[in-house]
Image 1 (cartoon, one colour):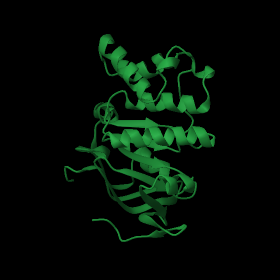
Image 2 (cartoon, helix red, strand yellow; image 1 turned 90 degrees about the horizontal axis):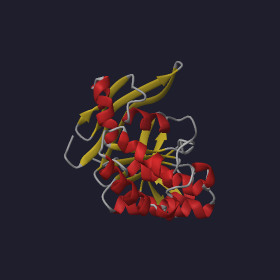
Image 3 (cartoon, one colour; image 1 turned 45 degrees about the vertical axis):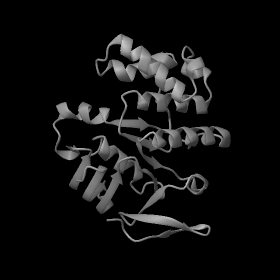
Image 4 (cartoon, helix red, strand yellow; image 1 turned 90 degrees about the vertical axis):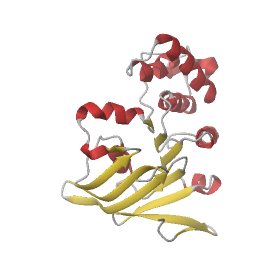
Length: 236
């Protein structure tokens, strides 16, 4: 794995309930790259993300994140792996009994950071997502778009090298979707690699980054040709 590669899947195979979902998947994400992962529901997109943060283990093959061989880690090493990743879910998964500040702070508290640093970092990431003025609000007081921005702030709290986003705009209206995409674009421009699952091809076209499709258990790079995404030659 080269220094410029932050994710590498090698010959990954995965089955669920006697159905093979992935077979011989090879994929690399480079440092600072933005990549969409597309394909029909149930094709294995979320499984790929789950393998990266060791929530699912492949039947065969090797998963690497930065310098860590993910599927060979001990359980004690998994928290170290997850601090290298920021994870954004479609359904927010915020703590409903804690305010915005406390939700973001929680990501730092579990890693043992000092209170002074936690306060500074939480205010910094809330500013990045435009929610400094909402720090004392409860999740139920926020719109869907605002809740997703809290999730992104929480994902950024530990300064991850990679942001994994599973349908981050799936439940949002067009304006909130635009706001989230602009935030992800800004995060990527600051050097964080982004791997994002989406079904929204209008996003893929409006924000043209590398696009990879899962098809027949394998991954395939695509590019726009007119109004269609067509296969391109595999990347080295």
